Length: 605
Image (cartoon, rainbow, N blue to C red; front, side, top):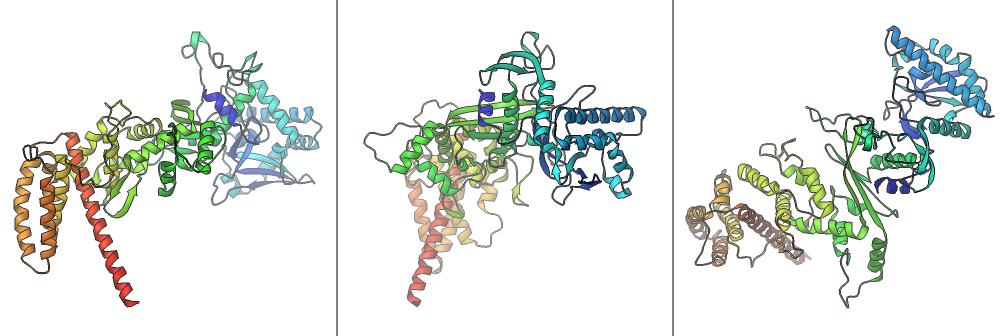
């Protein structure tokens, strides 16, 4: 289960009940007892750099203090405003903070604990506050975190402080009951509530009207506050018994994962994170910047999730990796937030071999050629998401915020679980293309994924659409797409400075009514070919293009010919044919140019 695997991952070297927080101010006390207030703000860290400090989730009417590192309201007694209530609250919180320091000093023989307690008991913090210059006083905010240093060392990092804080935290969070931990299976004291929350900045909660990310709240992984939420009216962790070690370790591990850019993928309102039972390289999980070499290595890895063919031999390195993947386990979690609660959108627990097979299938099912560069290309998931939106032909980019709603989550799930894209994706993409006539790698790859994984297909045996030009394909819609690309080339060759091409004028109707459009464009092409073949300079090109049209026409069935109308699948095949033919023609041009340059270079040598 999720909590068990997060607890098993561990929390590194961080003590229980600690969290990385930005500490802005430091009360620095030297050996002579002289104190000064230091500002830790830097150009890169406006609120101070992160440091592991004592932390517990606190709530209620009288939230208790943290040990040594807390807000200026607790440390100095600074009120939030000038009201009597605010001043009374600040004084109460400062008294609680001082009492906690006194308890630390009384429970320990650590001289630093006594020194800190005596400093605050003698009102050293108030004297320090009263002698601040105007600039520092203006900068000091009631919500800023303040820590304490003795002779240049953090007081809260003393072994006595860590041990004391664990005792305090245990007393605050313990349910007072003993039982069997649901995570580790051991008997002992159980927690009342999870001691930490997921940091608000780690789970996206969407964007505002200006397209800027919203700031979320800290959110609880397990939160049962009322009887209506719990099973049989039980609240808090009664139905999710967790021991202290597991509760602290789970949240530390989860926050560490969500904060690691190499172990997470942030969406608009969700975050996806992953880890392995036995830590290993997971660069193959990069869906947003797929590296061709890494993807092809993944595609070449034998037997990912498949039985080994009889008599097939493989090198020892591949076999060794295959065995490691079979023995290792992959875990992944997709989270979103609703106010102060975490929502688990997806949980994956599969062998590494299986997730690698799913990702290999993902790349294999959408890989495509493109006109501007040779070879097969793998499209970032974010680019597929954008491709479902509107194309701005003037700015030459997709309109921000116009992508299909929820498509990012759908495609991510498709990649991770190996299922089909949502049925509306193909129809939506075709609608966009008919409106803006824009065909690029991302749209072609997404359409290829839709065709290779139709929602109605349940058989593991499937007919894969070729990623590049298929010169033997006789599907009328595919052939018509190829013909349209050739007809466009004929027009451009005959009229090099043309402003409006047949793609601009006829692409939409060509996608839906091929027979009528073909007759009209074929008639126009005859005049262009006559013009080309009538000049010595363009005659070879005219003959080659005419021959290409004849060859493509021969692929059509004589009886059925070109259909009058195309459905969604037919329109998709048309786009494939058009894009593949363009890519093949430009690749041939690049090859011919390269051969010519190489021949010229050889003559000069």
